Structures are given as structure tokens and as C-alpha cells.
Length: 137
Image (tube, rainbow, N blue to C red; front, side, top):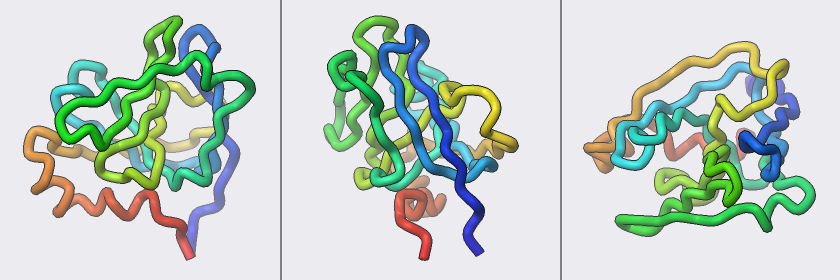
């Protein structure tokens, strides 16, 4: 049985980037140690892209950084520099939402899982992370 979903809102520090996402109130988040996530202390949960929506004129405040395979699209606010979400290499059909950027009041439980981004291929194959952006039936 699929967990009941709630609407979470959130965004960056200066509030120029705002979004909403439909996800459970209890989430599994991924703490990744790849070179980028480690430096940003990025810990995120992944949702299907269709469950994520940018609000208002947020897109005009975003810029994107890529590296390596250029599959991941690391978005961040041009004003305050915060990455409140991005498009992950592990789930190019999904969105990775930084759980600390979710407005307070809708997340009831956060379980932290480790993703070994330094050994990306092995961790990808062993973690089951690729299923996180698939619609539950």
C-alpha cells in the first residue's frame, strides 16, 4: 500500500525560488558523498518529476551547474546560492528535493540513507534509488 501523500512547499533562503511537491509526510532522504553533494551537505528525497512544480516566476531566478556525465542538473538560486532541488543523475526522470528546504509543518519523519557517490555505479546498483522517481501503482 502506497503512503498517503501531502503537499509540501519550500524553496531557497531568499524565497526567490519557490516550489511545491506531492510526497509522503514520512520520507527517506539520501545523504550523498559525491564531490558535489558532500561539499553542499546535500541530503534529499526523490520524487517523480510530475509531482514537482515550480511556482510563480521562480525559473527566472535559477541557474544550473553540471559536471562529469552532465546528466545531473544542479539548480541553484542566482540570488542566495541555495540548491533547494535538482535533477539527479540517478533519476533523470525525477526531482531531488533538499529536505531542509521544505517549509516546516508537513514533514513528520525523515529517515537518512547513505548513497556512496564516490563509488557511484556500485551504490546506484545496490541502493534501489532508481525506483524513487517511478510512479507507484
